Length: 355
Image (cartoon, rainbow, N blue to C red; front, side, top):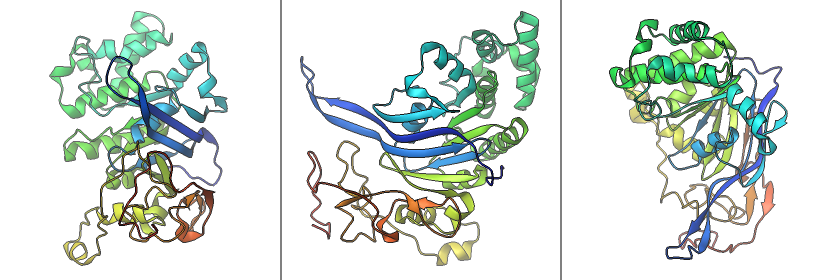
């Protein structure tokens, strides 16, 4: 893992939004609102680090990862990659971005073409980007990439159905590395794998990050895996990043009630500690991203909700004792943007003590 004493930002998002229109049925397909998948995200990813992005399913993690690579077009805000504005890139500039930034997908079987051999799959980015021209040079590079991810080069002529899930994911990683990227987004890359295989893939990603000097965004709902592989951790809730900090600080001193609840749900290896610790149970369901509460979006489930929470949208502010640890929570001071109490489409919670 990399030191963060001298940090250079590789990827940066400011006020990033990805909203999807909600349309009613019928011939006219009239718009009835928007789904706020990503809603005002500020986030920096530093060169050479592994940033873990964690949160419940449906919180917008994958959409954020796609937006950083412009695999989905943002509806607001900005994204920059190595100083260049991603949202304003031309087709030629996007082509270069696709080489310098890769993605490892969740389902290794669905992300591989069943009609193409491993050699064709891994070699395709080399051909697209004009790397290692010539059939023999490309074949040699494919063999190198397979060895790099722990596969026998002799499997190059096989098809995806001939591999286990872990082996298929290694093929996906080799393909993502073919363009010699600076930045790699791993979107739930271990979620579909057996537990023993998950550990192998995590260790592989850590080795590759150190060996190749990669910058990783590791997206997962598994906080244990995120803690194992990350230099820093960002916590996401309902389309917004609500806490960011060094992995050790976020794990030991979580400053946002939602982060504390996530950590309390992670099993401890010591049975006595597991039985004696206090588990935080959140009340209610996650609100719909089409009906985001006013103020702090976590307030409808927060055990520490108090007067400012419905009225002020909290901003990320320095918290705790570790440098670079920030959280969006009024418990550390009311810092943020005053909001209108009743926004169109906002749910009214009868049980909210502030109402």
